[in-house]
Image (tube, rainbow, N blue to C red; front, top):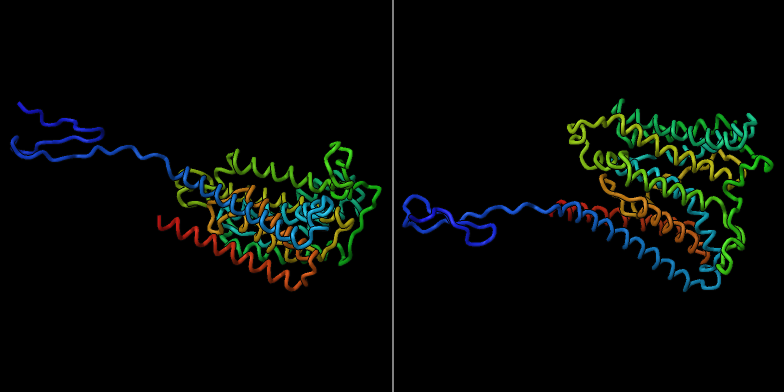
Length: 368
């Protein structure tokens, strides 16, 4: 008697249907699908980071050739890193929000308000500098939490909610400061968190470090590591990506999306508060009118670094590279004496290209 089934090769069998003398009909046993989607996404992210880093290197080389006596010097590199700090800190928080497919337009004026609050705590109230710093950072977290509540509980679009907060922070900064700068007493030690120097030219013998390596650079590096850990090694990071990828599916899986969105916006606000501390320490005063336009540079750094405006994709490393690209561009264009208006034009073109590249990636992934 003929066996109705027999294995001819791996994953394939033949079956006689009806009459045993009829030709065999091949049936294919499906092979389990390999988890290629996650690996492909991780590979695409690495490619995006490499492209952004390659762009940074290319821009650096161009300005080095254009101004070899000034641009590549250790002192100017320190200046580039120093100028990256404020935009970089704002970009770290913006990355968390944009990955959820949201947006935060309040980071610039929110930073100014946090700087004013730091001045109020340290100068007006006479609190010790460490307490004033913690209070200003916490106030930034409060601003972010209010944004999260407006987005989740009041169901406001993130663009509208944070636009309203941008105006509120702008007004409160002027009200609290009485429209005047608040100057810090050098004796308080507040300014040392930014312009002080724990690392000098004797820190690593034989290594050509600038004489004054600002503490602000160290603060930014530590903040970037913290943001990286939060995004890639914690529950907050996993839920962050899940909400941005598919918020409805995340809700159906039992995750309290409302709670986690509020937490994400609040954590992003902490970075805004830290940026307020750093810019006020750098200037030696809390300037209530500062902050306008910083939100655009922060969003630009995030997008240039490969974070998708549609949500669900992004990385802290890419954001840091994006912030460095903006700083290198600004610094190099100033050194070669490009007028400010043309600097804005060039930065705008870079942002347009970055967003267009993001849209191309989204269309390509939708096709595949």
